[in-house]
Length: 324
Image (cartoon, rainbow, N blue to C red; front, side):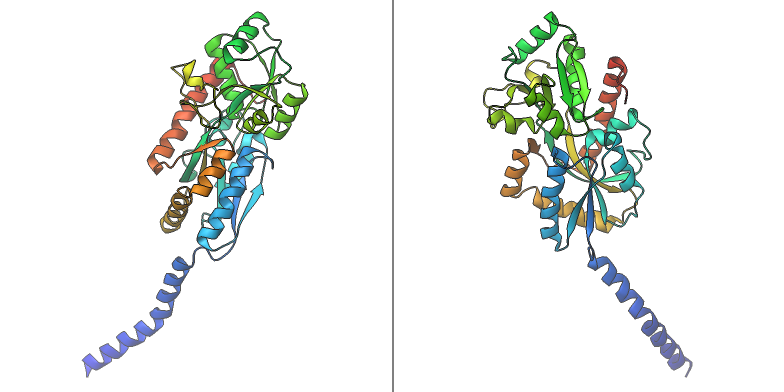
C-alpha cells in the first residue's frame, strides 16, 4: 500500500515536471527564434559594414532566422562595442568588430567595456589587406619612393584614415616610426570620405582595404598593402613585410558576443560561422572587400586581440597618438 502511494506520488511529480523539462529543452533547441542584431560599430559604406552585411545574410540563411545589421558608429568603434557588451547575453546581439575597436580604441577614448572580460569570441573572419594608395597626380610610384619623398618633404604629405585608432591610422603611424618620416594624419568618421578625399586630392594618400577597388579603376595608385605575402588581387604590389621584417601589426575582423552568452548558443554560432567561412562564394566576397578570410580557433582569436592590444600600446606611446 505504501509502495503504491509512493509510486502515485512519483507519477504526480513527473507529470508536473515534464512540461517544465520539455519547455526548457524546447527553449534551448529553439535558438534562434527571433531576429539577431549584428552591430557594426562604424558608419555604413566601410569595410566593417560591408563584412557585417555579408556575414549577416549568410548567418541568416544558415540559422533560418533574420539577421539585421545595426550601425552604431563613433569613438573609434567603442560606442557600438559598449552597446553589445552591455546587451542581454542571449545570442541575439553580436558585434562585427574590427580588432582595433577592442584592442586599440579603448586606449585612446573612455570605453564602457573591458575588451578581455566583456566579450566571448565567436569567429575570426579575416585579416585586412589595407592598401596604402596615393592620389595618381603625385610624383610617387612606389613605396620606396613614398619614403624618399616624405624624407625630403617632412610634414608636406597628408594621409586619411577611417578614424583615430583605426587600422589605417595605426599602420601609418607604425610606418612613420619605423622609417623616421613625418606625414600628417587627417582622421575621418569612416572609410568612404577618406577615400573620396584622397581621390579628390584633399589628402595625398590613404591606408584602407577598400582602396583596392579604386586602384583597379585607376583612381588611386597602390604602393603596398598590409600583409605578409603577395596578394593575387594586387599583382606587383608588395606587402609591408617586405620592407619591415619586424612588422607585427595587422587589422583583423572578428565576431564577438557578450561574455555571459550561454555556451550552447555560443557553440551554435561558432559552428555556423565556421561553415559559412568555408563556402567558396563567401570566401570570394570577403576577398572582394579587401580582407583575407581566415578561420581561427577561439584561443588564436583571443591571442590576436591581446597581441594587437600590446602592439598598439607601444605605437600609441611612441607616436603620442591621442583621440583628438
